Image (cartoon, rainbow, N blue to C red; front, side, top):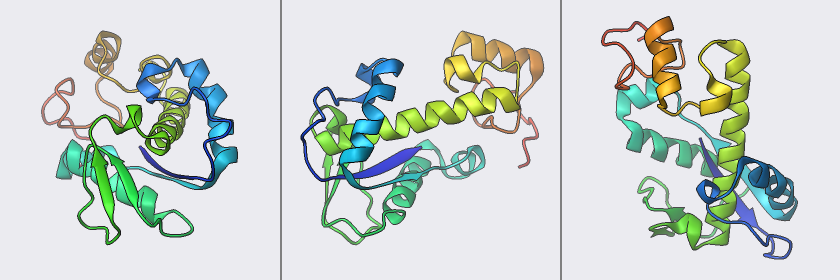
Length: 171
């Protein structure tokens, strides 16, 4: 999951930071403030099959391109956390640890993280027993144990180390 956010102003966005440094409750609290201050925002995603086909880094870039493409107007310049999107024609700056330096990158990281967490909560209801609501899809011991006991569900990447080799996930 990736997000693109174009902010109108910095006002009212105190506390916006790298989503990984914030608690889930704090991210949820900041999300409506970010969306109110956004001139535009968009989400982009890549699914397990795309990640298996093109690898995690290229799937991340794909999700980012989709987020930018979903904006109602093209941005003048992209600030991107750690990668470059060569396929996009607009000027861009890649910033290492950009979600700790740039307010717009931090805002986008929060929008993406809250959206992904909510999606994982939905998947938890769709695929009970895997614990998606608690581990949010990360390879925690709980998650790996559930995959080992239950086998993978359609959300699991066949190339992920915790998924049994040759697991048929629609590939």
